[in-house]
Length: 264
Image (cartoon, rainbow, N blue to C red; front, top):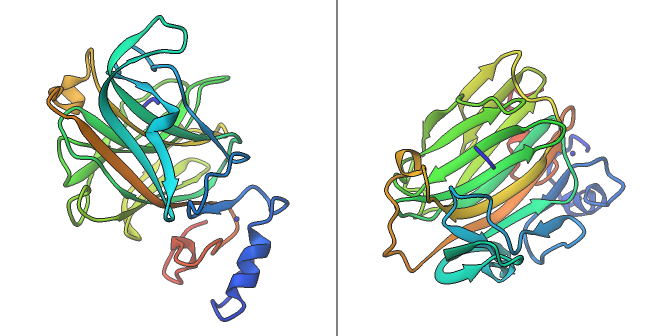
């Protein structure tokens, strides 16, 4: 919706290889295990709402990085936008990369937030020159599956629900999507769950986003009825990585390290 290296055996040299791979000069791939918030990579949304469909305002204080995890919090507290023009019942959190990224493998380990009307999202997005987007959206109304979707030049409605092996709010789950020219593949815990091959697959470089928000006007049909009794919910991200097309094994545990992976 809205909103990579050398192929090597992971031996005792892996740490040194990883350090070299993670240097700023290494292509545009990255791995972040959230030991700290890298302000050169990430931008924290603060002081606005994305529209009437959202019952919260992005707040910098609603995002924390500690103990190797990123936590996004949705909290019931009257919040006003930075320009004073919007008021909402909740504060919420969003993180986005400063740079755009293109074809490759996007991976994140996430624990979602449960609750009707909530959306725990991991996605890529760009709005200029046109709206392109690829989504993993875990709706709080149903922790047994998530919505995969994509938009090209603002045209969407390519949604398909994908099952997860255990409740998304109870265990960390590995979500990934592989984006190449004319194709998108979505994975859960390393297993291919959906493949789209089409001329209308997005082709514009995009930013990487994480967000936790609740719906308002016009969202109940998709997100479920708004639950105003919710006081606080959290979405947790253990790590995120991007491996550019043509490369492999940017970080230990990446789907692209597997000899069974059929990407590129």
